[in-house]
Image (cartoon, rainbow, N blue to C red; front, side, top):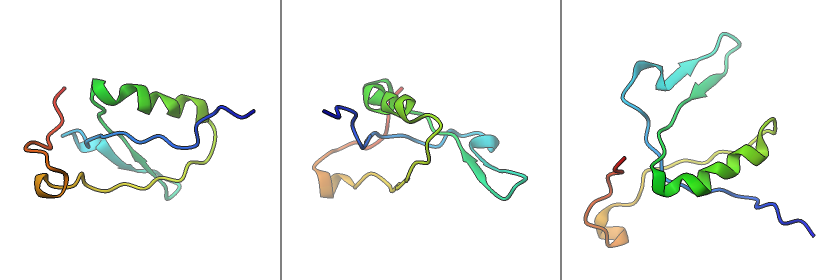
Length: 76
């Protein structure tokens, strides 16, 4: 039985540093994200996929009106 999860969903922000998004010499990109402690268990799933090609989909967290939250900022 395969117990390995096939997705990881967590909140993250791009850090306020110039190197958060870097262009590679071979034409690729490297992206750095900050993940709050509350989302770390889900983000740690990435360690199981080290060395594999990942399919990445990102988007902004929905607004308070859409989700019913008053504050969508991540606190570290």
